[in-house]
Length: 151
Image (cartoon, rainbow, N blue to C red; front, side, top):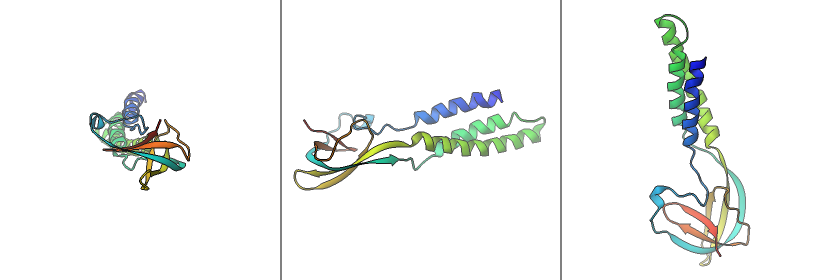
């Protein structure tokens, strides 16, 4: 049991580290020093949304490995070790996938904005900056898009 915990904790921490940050103040390294277009605009509507991951394979893989290793320590003899490894891997995959799904789930805001030229855009981003309907803002459109306050 202690060995299973020793394997489970690093797996959970590794999966948690995979969760992307989706706020308007968060940039990927690939976006740094890249030119983006900025469009002055006005927020038309805001609604809170849930942002979920569509890929939980990393959690399933890490959980399967940890579960297989932990399961192989069960019983005495080669056949019981093999059965324990298979059962542990299957259980670990399921638990790892569910854990990643829960850790990747975040709250966000969907902003619908109208640019000064009349174009309407929808951008979903994290909750680090809350804008309200009628507020002036800037649509930053590049590798990723974001809505930021316009001062």
